[in-house]
Length: 95
Image 1 (cartoon, rainbow, N blue to C red):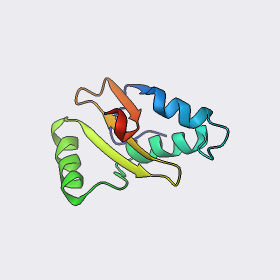
Image 2 (image 1 turned 45 degrees about the vertical axis):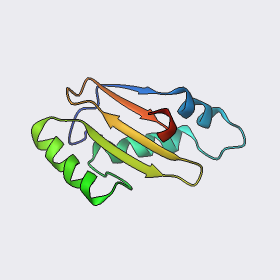
Image 3 (image 1 turned 60 degrees about the vertical axis):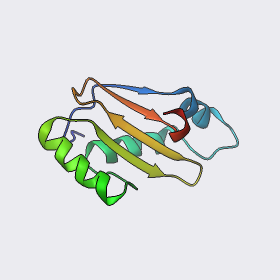
Image 4 (image 1 turned 45 degrees about the horizontal axis):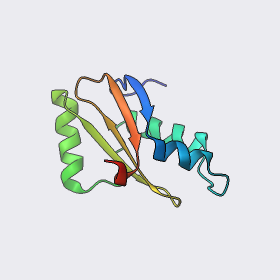
């Protein structure tokens, strides 16, 4: 499904990989794909109002786009770089 901006190369940190690989965790690849789809469609998730406004500005001016999703297992951040060359999925503590 096309989004409202390109994601570029999608990468994940070791923390996200560990979250998916953890057999005790209920977080799955399908959950991750759903969050990526939300991000690329402009659904910022659980960001504050200031970040919503920043993302709207970023979409118009080709700047970095930042989304936050609070999953029952962990909070996931997704950041697409300004040049749209890459999108990184990470845990907040990995920033």
